[in-house]
Image (cartoon, rainbow, N blue to C red; front, side, top):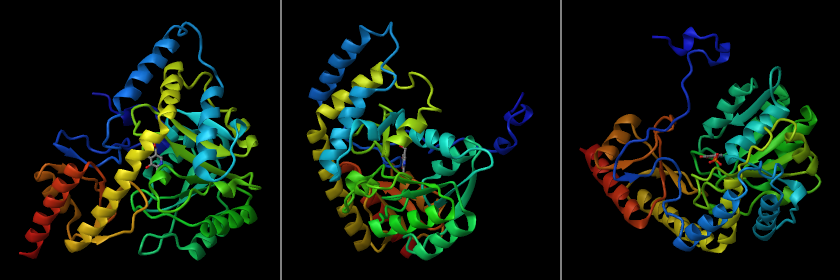
Length: 368
Ligand SMILES: Cc1ncc(COP(=O)(O)O)c(C=O)c1O
């Protein structure tokens, strides 16, 4: 049988495996940071209506620039981000992964490099690889916060073309303050100047405000967002960015024409009409996330402070065995490869109870 490596694939793809969390069929799935609440029925009905409307025009290509959708996303950011954002500041694509890919196609690429502070979202490195961008793994402190001094030094030494700051960070849950972004931005401008991408996929769950106001006067800063988490619409595939209008113009050099289908645009617009209801679920999830932190600590686990819809907990002498023990009790969590640590996504109260019961048993087992 022909395998990948028998094909004339690019050297940097040889021997590599695709991204993928295990998709196991277990009763409680808390491994991919999804929102556990299905979309409310009135929204499902509104999506059906708007998609029906769009379907009547499917013989035509969609709005290539997604102007109506970008206008509504800008209004959402302005309302929640404490910073005025216009349609000219916003770009949208199929999930924030595609936004990040377009950014690396535009500002990275062969002969260029990007840096991230790891452990962090593994797709940053994978998208770098896919776009031929060299990857530099920057440091973090032992408590998983960004070591600002070391990060500034790594930027000065490597002069990367793109700097990723994930806040709140995945898989650790830690968020950064404006001062950290400013220090890294200044270092990146002095070294190159380079683009700084703040990945705010989980920001709606944070105790801190969005870093959007930092866009003012910083044309090399980009904030990326998604409807996959807070809007409970991971299946929709809609991500977006806010930045200087020049960045929005630049990514259009690499986007495929008509990349956002009319069905996607219609669905996202329907979801945005129901923003308040969806953000209500976010409040419930934040309370559940805080409960997970408290209860895991009461069970004797170490827990990283979380600003996201998930919690990193540990530490286990055998991470895989701990993951398996929780799975054996019907609960799937994520082993992100951070030695000693696992990550659980905040689910419904019932799912979280099942998870906490499984950890209680695991901790008892470990005491024996
Ligand atoms: C930090 C971070 N950024 C971006 C994404 C990509 O999300 P999507 O492509 O669904 O918008 C994820 C998904 O888990 C993530 O954890």
